[in-house]
Length: 234
Image 1 (cartoon, rainbow, N blue to C red):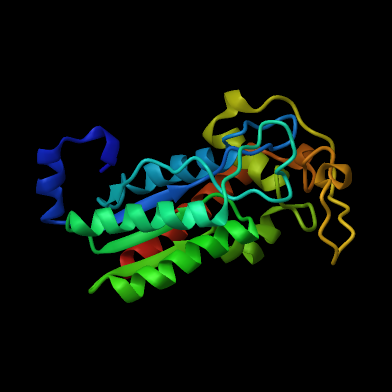
Image 2: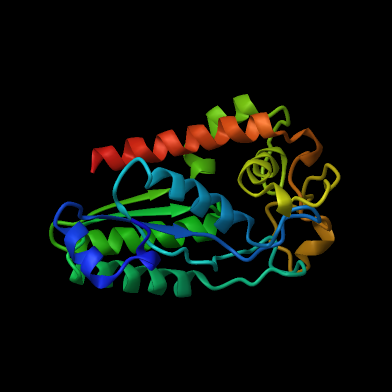
């Protein structure tokens, strides 16, 4: 059930059979010169739309904005603070709980550290507050990194690289505009730097030129199957 497309009557009827809702989270964030700014949102939402064809749960509209740190200065990135993301999560889950839903699956297409931490912190607080609720937080790039390493040829593939490019080639090929060159950030760790773009000018972590539809389809199936497995555990 795609929430934005149904009526309140359909919502009420479906609620009698299902108490589970998925909240997708993404970003408006640079993904090199070849992928759209909505890459994280697109990947999460398109895969989840396929999931709800197989599992009749509620799918909420995606939250398009997320916490972006290392890409915050790149053109096109529109970041929010961790506190804003926590508050959005609190409000959405509490509202859904008031409407009778009890199982909440937070799925993020963005793997940023502060972003994921904000979602997990919100979930930790909500689970203490909401009687009878179940909450899961899932990021495919964290949960499936070993499996994704086997699919990718690029070692340490990440942002706008081989895997993400392959996924967009499958989910929205018309939005892939050529390929960015292979690149990796060069931050002087453990220092936190102000001018992040200086150390990562192209905003790519990996080699998009090695992306393919075959790898994208394999990754899509893996993520979809894992999400269904979690849903079945509610």
